Length: 148
Image (cartoon, rainbow, N blue to C red):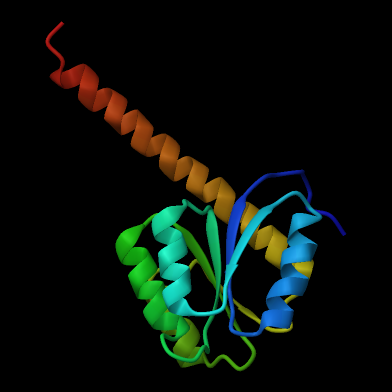
């Protein structure tokens, strides 16, 4: 099933399960999304320094830097990026912690593709509104401070 309306988004998938990443990447790209991926939190941070993403889909449990630590560091760099956490065995405590740290939502694996697409679409719409608001504030600031 396709999303309600066609949309474009830049998505970063972060999960230590390579097969999961490859399958999900193909399923999202077929729907017109631009997808990058990382299998470690450190690699995800490097990618977010190089590119802007509309949404990061981030696994909670990874070796090395886990999903919560990766979430904190990505949000410190780009507070406006939308993040959806994934977990095959999430707890109420970990999902609550992820939301407190700035995650937009928390989905259980195996993820339903339509539910994920809906979350990506919502995140993209929210990011557009945030960027539009910031641009409007910058314009107002320029108009107020410019000596005409």
